[in-house]
Length: 320
Image (cartoon, rainbow, N blue to C red; front, side, top):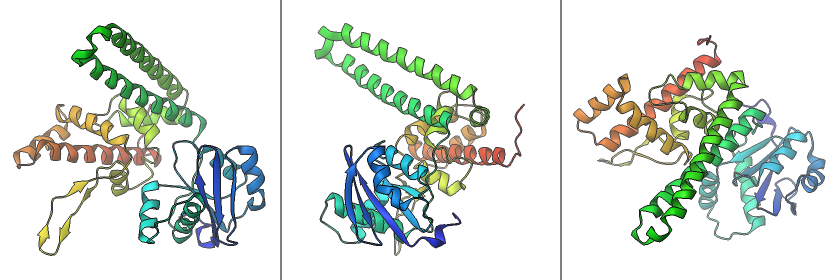
């Protein structure tokens, strides 16, 4: 827990859009809207600079919140970037139906204030990690574009433009290869990233492509417990029981980019000579479906990765 969480007296909630940001102060009831730029945000938030008795909360909005978080960090204002799903659940629990920017900012502030002691504080990523994440996200976009184009190429009606589509696929593949080289170069210049990548590659199913993607998309690995790791990756089994009824466990939530990665890793691990392949076969022999067994392997992979990185953090693993 952050040492200052017990001192939180009020919160600032921010509803972020591309052009503007609306904020709500729970202490004064003040509502304001400013341009989503560092200059405007710094001017509006300067009166709150250095205050340790407050918490600023915004939702993750695909990058539109970045300038706000940078300004909050510069002004030494404690901040939390909230999971939009949890904020929406909080708003529903409050019985609210109306939706405007000021109303959303108010609810976000109330969400943060009610959970101030348990919400993790936002910290900026080191420069190399931030750049790797941008490249990884761009790579993910390109892979999605490649799949779309490959599907178009298979459609019979697209035969007249097959050469155009094939050329675009080849160009996308070249871009992906170039990004992979950039990621590899950046990681090689940062000892911590290089070590963490090497450790991840000791986990069955995690290779040179998936390892940097996990580093970028789940930087918490090695700093959280096994249940949190499985939950963040969307691999934690959730019960569905009521009275005498015992429903099937299911997995949901987590970061949407992680599940496809872990599914690929689980497929590779299940066909390897590792202990995870033996676990996969044992689950099938016990009557589990292939998807259920692969889900269990996904969970094993992320838990093992988290444990090994935690050992590295505690200097129990030394790399030469």
